[in-house]
Length: 357
Image 1 (tube, rainbow, N blue to C red):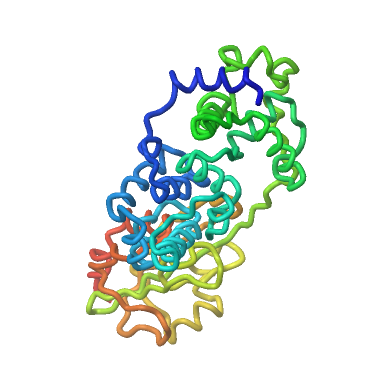
Image 2 (cartoon, rainbow, N blue to C red; image 1 turned 90 degrees about the vertical axis):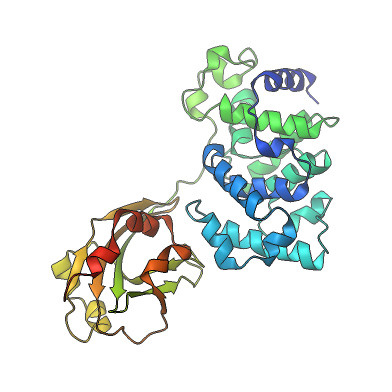
């Protein structure tokens, strides 16, 4: 262990750490819950979700007994919904197969669905004080800059080298404290852009600072390829005030969440262009009256940029398909992607649907 590193880090953390609710926990269920929520999510956004989940599901059995729709509804807006599905599936495994006993070793924790090396290390150290060094994006960045590691952080072979370095720095007597401190320092001080290097406790030992390479580290090998998609949603409403929705399947984005009838096109289409497409004509036997056409909603995901329009249409009868019919005044019961939820918040569909056709 590099004692100078651990001592400085511990001293900084004691003065500057944030008071976060999961840091007062040793309950592995709540620590696991916080770690799953905080995967690819900032603390500021994840906090309210953690509090909501611990209020609604105070233990693993309550989470296991919830329906998937209930879990996804509570998760709504947080993104990366596979996390919520894995969370629910793992809760059922722990509650029923493991009789409510959360795994207490790194290898056992690592076998849980949705848990990788980082999450297993975090739970093992925070809940059981086991000596496993965490390696998340904040730690990669700090180690790369401080020690001048010029290896790409998105490479499997590089990960082994970073893990060796993280392990060598770990304070094995206080692994939970060390891991909390190194992640906190990376997220709050050694920030991705414009860190305050002049005030850094490590500036005299930092390779990136002394070599003016702070902006260049860490290195990434692969550039993310962005896919652009165009969604055309039909909000179909009958005279009784029911609306049609579908549950998304097929391993695509938002699996398990609900949406309105969708036609996806390769390009952005105007209303005139769209109603002439074969997909549109196949859905309606006769040309429908469009009561309302929304603005274009843009939604940015890590690998996809989505553009969506919503067509509100009042129907004498619904198309015959496998869609779910639900009362419009009960629409908020269902878990929708944030893009659709934004439309619902912006739009008084009930008032629009009261127009005569």
